[in-house]
Length: 102
Image 1 (spheres, one colour):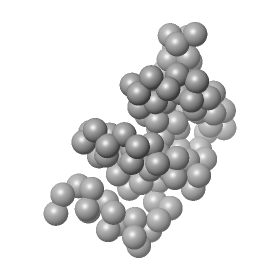
Image 2 (cartoon, one colour):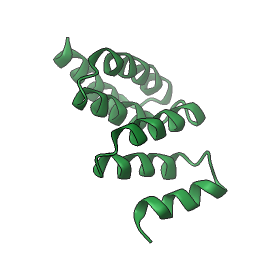
Image 3 (tube, rainbow, N blue to C red):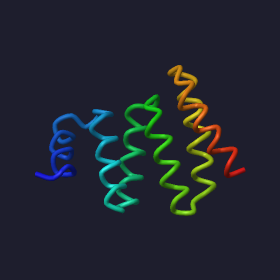
Image 4 (tube, rainbow, N blue to C red):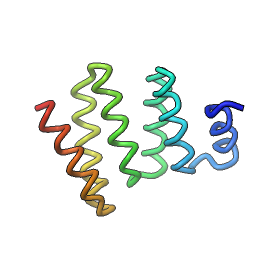
């Protein structure tokens, strides 16, 4: 069973599992299925609004697709989530990304 199928099976039983949902998004991104990845990142954030990696990686995916305004918005949301969860390391990385895109 491939990674996408395995994670989809897990999510069928536990749809709000942040780790599995994020893993599925990353698997889609690795396969170049960016729309699917962005959908899964958004679902991760919807169910787990403080799951900071989903903000950061979805912003990177959006930047890769040239969707700078959406990436900027996602990074700003991610900075708020990082502050809520005390994730200073991710906050500094997301701030650096924001600084890079202006």
